[in-house]
Image (tube, rainbow, N blue to C red):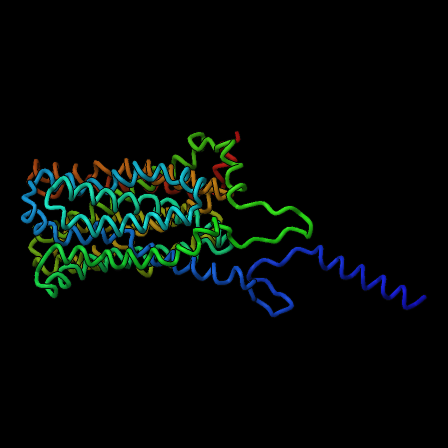
Length: 447
C-alpha cells in the first residue's frame, strides 16, 4: 500500500513538473543559474552581433559622401544646387521609407526586413560610385538610404522584443555603435581614398564591405520570424506561430496620432535631428570663418561627433533608471544653449569647450531612441511609435540646414543662424520634457 502511494505521488510530481512552463532565458535552471536554452542562446548572440553591425552601417553612406563631396561634384559635373539637394535627401528618404517599416515587419518579420535593409545598403553603396551620372548617383543613394530608413525604425522594435528587460543597455550599445560608425566614416574616408590611389569611387565603395558583413548575422534569423526568447506555454497548449501573433494587433491598429506623447516625441526627434544636421553641415565653417585653421576646424567637428560614442551608452542606461526622462532632455538642452552662446560671443577663443558642449547636446538622439522603447508597452506599439516619431521628425528636420545656409548668405555672418539654432533649442527642451513623462501611447490613444 505504501509503495503504491509512493508511486502515485511520484506520478503526480512528474505531471506537475511537465506542466510547469520553461524558464525564460537568463533565469536559473536545473542546469545552472543564468543559463539560456541552447536553441535560443545562439539566436540571442546573433541578434546582438546583428544590432551592432547594423548600427555601424546606418550613417557611413552619408558621412563618407560628405568627406568626398567636392570630388564627387567634380567627377559627375554636379552643380552646387544639386549638391545642396543631395544633403537634404537623407532625412527625406528616412521620412518617406520609414513609414513602411511597421507594415513590412508585420508581414515578413523585423529581422527579415533589417536583413533586406542591409542588402539594400550594400547594393546602393556598390552601385552609386559607378553610375556615371548625377541621376544614377541619386537613385543609388536613395536605395541605400531606403535600407537605412527601415532599419532606423525597426532597431528599437528588435531591442524591445528580444531584450525587454535591457532596453537601456541595448539601446546604448546600438547608439554607441551608430555614433562610432558616423565618426569613423567621416574620419577615415579621405585617408582610405588616398591609400587607394586617390580615386573617390574606390573610397566610397569600400563601405559596402562593412554593409555586406552586417547581412550575415540576420540570415539565420530570417527563418526565425523574430521568435524572440519568451516563456514556454504549458504542456499541451497549442503553440502559436510568431507571425500569427504579430498579425493580430494589426487588425486593430493603434491610433498613434491621438497620443500627445507620440506628437511630443516626434517633434523632439525632429528638432534634435535638425540640430545634429546643422552641426554636421555648418559647425566647421563657423569655426573657419572665426579664424580657426581648416585642419583644426575639422578636428573640432570630429570631437563633437566622437562625444556621442561614450555618452550614447551612458544616457540610455540612465534614462531607463529614472521614472521620467524630461530632466535629461533639459540638461542636454542647457549644454546646447551654452555651446551656441559660446559660438556667438567667442567662437575661436573657447572653440574646444563649445565643441564639447555641442557634442553633449547632440546626444539627444540616443535619448529619443530610448524613449521610443519606453513610451509603448507592446512590440507593435513600439513599431508604430518608432515609425511615426522618426518619419515625422525627419520631415521636420529637412528645412533646418537649408534655412541656416540662406540666413548666412543673406546676412553675411553667423549671428542670425546661431540665434536660430538657439531658438530651436527652447522648444526641443519643452517637448523633450513632455515626451519624458511616465506614460504610454497605448493608454493615451485608448482615451
